[in-house]
Image 1 (cartoon, rainbow, N blue to C red):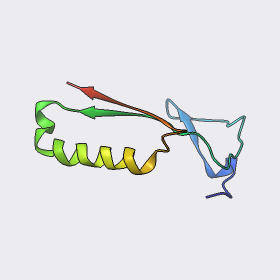
Image 2: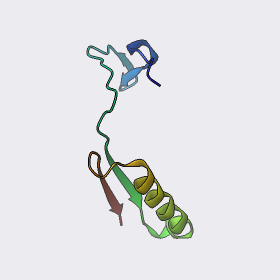
Image 3: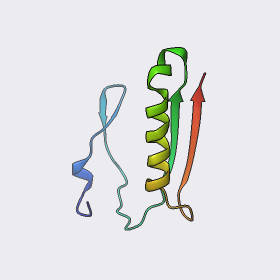
Image 4: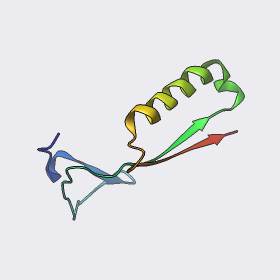
Length: 75
């Protein structure tokens, strides 16, 4: 969506609304993302679909020459 403005967002800290002081639009922003993946025993039944979804998102959603991503596992 290219027509979003500062008023389309709400920023809160500790449940209190904050003022958005700086807002700008970029036509081709760089995406930097970190995914935290829960690999504990309780997640084992859904781990394979979670892993497949994560891989699909990273393969389809990132531009290798521009974006950065990290996947961190919680053991």
